[in-house]
Figure 1 (cartoon, rainbow, N blue to C red):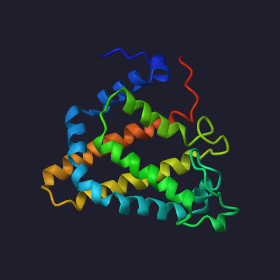
Figure 2: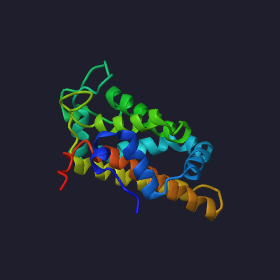
Figure 3: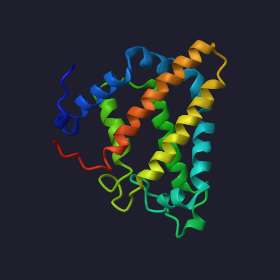
Figure 4: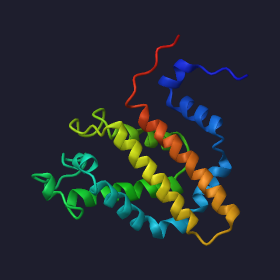
Length: 195
């Protein structure tokens, strides 16, 4: 039985990520599979991004979080939710961030910088980073991650590759999105008290 320093899981991001990778079986082969999907996934990123934002637009509980000025956006902000249309410049700005995120997942090195980046993706959706007025509730983040996971799976299933390659890709991306989800959820929960 391997000993895990549970307190360190809450304070050492690299240790936490390594533990999760080991526990889930997220291996270098999974990373190679994810990177191997880049040429197939890249042309589909705009449609995937549009699908995510169409889903977010369909609920006031998700869309309202795009009203405050997004960190780094310097253009005009909408006066009300009705003015915040899917073609608003602030939404175009956010769509570009999602496209960059997806590109980084399939092209970036899975090193300490990537782990920090994935952690920031979680943190930026809370008041702890970026605009202090933005606090996306955890239920909305979980809904989004579930939608993204399903969209990625549907995209992979549409690839013209073998069933074995599809299975490997779905499993690799599934583990990656669970890793990302942990690095989102950790910014919402207080560290547990050790008994």
